[in-house]
Image 1 (spheres, rainbow over the protein chains, first blue to last red):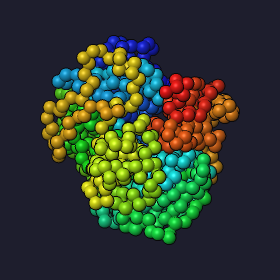
Image 2: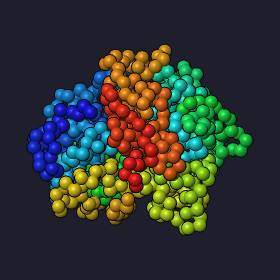
Image 3: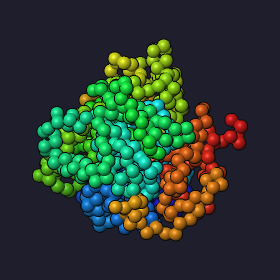
Image 4: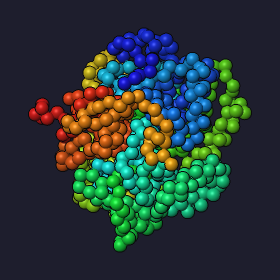
Length: 522
Length: 104
């Protein structure tokens, strides 16, 4: 893999720091994630005079939203696959103009640990898929977590067949690899991402027999104020909507794919009408021929690194966990800030605003001579952030999964893809063995215990564990190892080096007390 | 209207090269991941599961779901959606945990 030029040239122990890592060690701030939030935060912090380590798993900045083909693919018009490209191009120009950012590409962060009162250690493995077995530790006085989100999935019969792919996954493979999962692709699930995915796939040559959305867009109407104060979001919807019209893509609302047909790969799907609680209406199933299905039910904040540090979380309106943040983006753990989807999914524009805001807050905390956080500019950023946050909350409410979705499941439907645990097995653990929460279900059935650590099945298992009438507890997103780490890497850590989560020393805005960090359970 | 993703973005890639999937020749473009090269050849499965022996391929596309694990150049459990394709790569369907030779 073509790592950035800041890649070290020789293997090193995690405490030997020289070469590019050493030049600014410890950095003023380590920004984890180089998507919209992280890039905006890193650029702003560098412009304010801070030394910045921008740590990211990908080879190029942009995160998932601004994923671009590798330069050798020679894309002359990458912007053809993107909305609001100018904003990203602007950030990249600013990144190139500053010398304060050390971009550590191809670095997969597996934990962040406190090293002292004002020092943090960011531990990463390197390589395209983290298999480079070259452990790296970056130290910084402040942490900005900008790790984005992953796609939330709800299972249904046949969803493990090859050709069923995440809607965001199809989009990501298209943006980076210039490929499609099939020729006739049904796009289904819930959330604003579906329209964007369908219009990109159609523009790239796929036939889209249907876009299937579980909610009715009329639910937006309940949040008139949030819509009226965020006209850019309406414009975005109009852009995607008109693209779908141009490609003659039919949109079916209040419907879901309730079964995928095929033996070795997708051959067709059944689309059923849903009632207000997302129960399939009997007798409404219609079969649609296709060779791929792109499916997703919104995004879930990727917060495992922050949870490992003891940062407080809150339940979002659509049943996910997000970080509790104060007015200047700081988590409940002093010295750790967060921006973008980690505080609740809200899109790229909100992420940029929050990244910038967090950078001002970090600079002020580190005592730099910068524009005061009382300045008019920061006040403007905060107002913009609040306005877009209210829209994000409205969207989350509108697309929250209805309580009736588990009726899509057959007893033999795999809920946990990694460990191949069926809905029937999970229901048995709940109904017969008394499990009431996802963790107990996991211990009884192995659901959520596989490679993905519950990212794909967590939302579903949480719903099933709560039973038909119980309160659904959002997935805890607690993963002591955010990515797989070779044993050799752990063995190479110096004895006594703290990699265990550290108790927070105070929580200025915690709405709920942070849970005690648990030990690894896998 | 563009008919392929490459036409849409006006791609002018470097010369294509070959990899193999279970012995079948697959053409890849420089800069594509192994998974992208396989999708480009219409291949969507390159793993069978440990319990049911069911076929799987790329699902999340961003390295989060681990469904796209493949044996690449004899090394199992590589995430095909992240690993860049290289000329001459030998990809084989990963059966189960991919370490059958260990007898465990």
